[in-house]
Length: 217
Image (cartoon, rainbow, N blue to C red; front, top):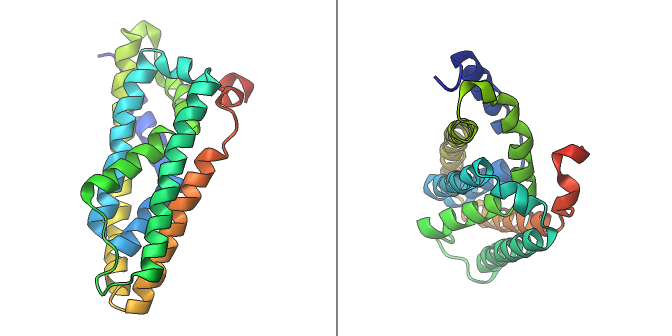
């Protein structure tokens, strides 16, 4: 077996604790659950997972290191992703202010997945974190290194997905109760729009990826 069961358990437990740590991803999911329901929040979490499915092979084959060391390429990605999220957040915000409806603003499953995917994929710190965290649990003597990276990376994303879906369902349930009030629903939608804008701004204001390499920490 490539990965020792005890190592896999320790890795999974560490990932669980990290997944429960408050951050932009969790805030985005909770905000979307409160304002737009369980479905939108769960689809956003699925977008995070799909971004991880892309990130893990990149890491396993060394492409993530190449991209992380190319600030121009990373700047283009994060600026484009940040601008998209800001646009979506502003659209939600102003829609709730100038065009309120009894049902509130809705988001399609595709849009929710796309926004979660972009928010995770274009975040340089998520790439650098994976570059710093996963190698600590890889044992070259146990077999193929890139297969170990793939297995650990997928386990990491699966554990995170379980946590995020649970939070999405919980926040969606709370949001369903709060949205019975039209005023509360409007405030929740505005808060969610501002939150998406904040995530987009955060992506655009991150430090140069070359300055975030693990060797410099």
